[in-house]
Image (cartoon, rainbow, N blue to C red):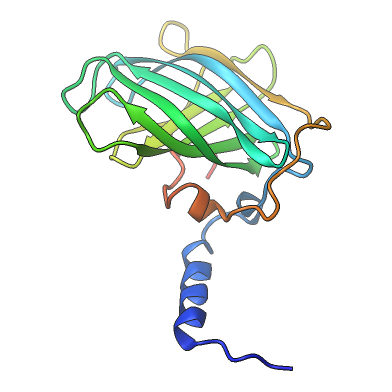
Length: 194
């Protein structure tokens, strides 16, 4: 039996499909089974200022879970230091076997419209963490491209990808990455995977 579907809905679905066609197929999926990632450290921003971060995310009891805090000591939008503090995690996605993106909404300490959307990329390349990677992009144009955390004096920290456990159940149905990340592209660059 065929059902009538208005043409504007079909057009929207086709357009959405074309909009995400460039993304890897794995980026459309939650890790199976869902896992979680944690990390913290410091980076040099794209403008060579020091920044600190702490981030964790994943799935827990059928929902997304996590928190991101980030401080750019060089400032942004006239606010120094510039603080980003998450208020909601809206997505968690496996990009590669060792790469996870955390998406959500955050407040900042600047007078800009609140909240902003964020997309954080974290890569666990094994211990002791000298080749792990971190990057962040905000909906207001702020970006620190994904970079290695093992540059002595400029970047450091550790990212750890944790295995699934009985509490790390994913949302069902899971949102598409384009929706969960509010259309933000990943903070790629500096050798990070696309």
